[in-house]
Image (cartoon, rainbow, N blue to C red; front, top):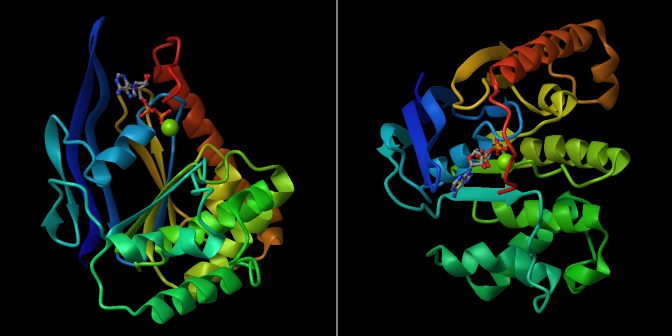
Length: 266
Ligand code: ADP
Ligand code: MG
């Protein structure tokens, strides 16, 4: 089986005033088509750096990133990105924000088709009727829903999410998790979800990859087996508890490796 995302031996250091800061060290991650992989690891270990490399926004010092059998050498329009901060444009309506990638990525869609596509996605995430609102008129959870729509409106090959639910309260976050499952049923995608929430990783992902402390390498990979259940209660089963326990131990090992340092928030 071919992998849609192949991260092969990626090694990267930032050049800082204090000298090189090694961040990724011979990192290997493979994600088969249709899978959603969660990446967890200590704060500052290099997770956001990894997303920038996969999106082609940066080149690694060594190693390669392959998407769909093509080596990534520059930013790609076929990658969808979602971040903790939804960065919606205030001067555009919610619908116009969702449409944005369709205005950037070359396509033959008419204005009406773009609008319909946006409205279809907004309905799917529970924002029917909010297309004409401005971002500031929506709650944080609703803005994140709209931003999710925007990240997949152009049907990207790969969806990369960097702690997308990190700023939401626990209940809103769980609602968004359920929306993610609903979205995946209607709009299957391959993706990488960076998260520091182990429950989120087990609930949403097909596999969980634990990164070591910086410089990060692949420390542990877990196949999530919850029998296809997508109700929140599945998190309270013995299977989920056992997986969470193992992941927790792996995070502690990863933290043990981490070099303490004042972390810059990037
Ligand atoms: P994570 O997302 O896992 O918290 P990051 O990938 O953001 O980690 O950062 C990894 C390390 O690299 C951190 O120590 C961070 O301070 C440092 N870092 C991130 N971006 C830069 C940059 N542009 N220049 C220098 N150091 C950076
Ligand atoms: Mg980060």
